[in-house]
Length: 266
Image (cartoon, rainbow, N blue to C red; front, side):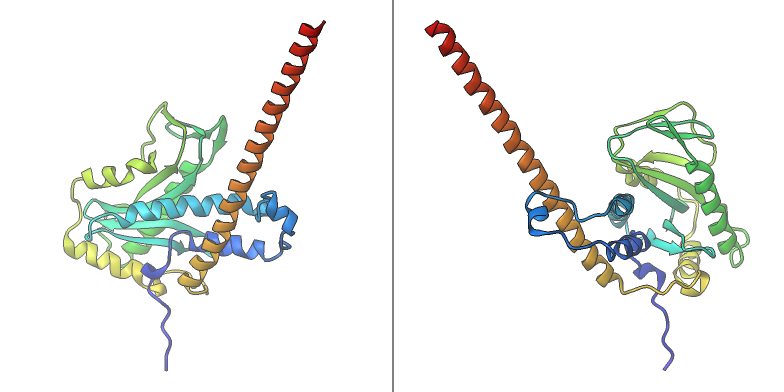
């Protein structure tokens, strides 16, 4: 019997990022009961960026899942020789898009014609997004030579503010919260037949670099367990912080009362 690899649409949002995260976490020793009690995070320092990246991609994946059925999303698409992927590829009436997710919770984002800055630090997001779109365009044009170029998109998750000095010519940069609305406002540029053909090409594992992976359900279950530990640890840290603040306030009030009594007594 010949075993065929699963279709690409079966991959979950952030699958490759989660695989990297879980791999790093295997070397992290279990927390002691005391560490758990005081809310020590189960994540090692090297895992934090992977964890946040996974959260961002999952958030955008949920947004894409709310689109009408004539849109098809692919997640964590492995491409190239290195262990890299494209966060999301989206096909629908409005066109074909590569979506690069960036999770910058509470950060100030500045966007220029050729530059993106996060809290004052330059990021090479625009050329990277353009390169991803060009690669997918090349893949699709092998079978659909007249296809319009794939459009690169950068979806920013939970930024505090986005300031546009100039809008990039090729890359659409937007807050992930308005991604769905923007997509649905686009004028149709693909016919039903073109959409179907592109989906077949993108859905085939033979189109992409083969990447042996555990079952998506197993990956998501393990991430959900780790995510639950991280959230519970955060709640415990907040709880202890509140207790400490109340203790300090209580101590301050007690001291003030003693001083007042001493002054009255004097």
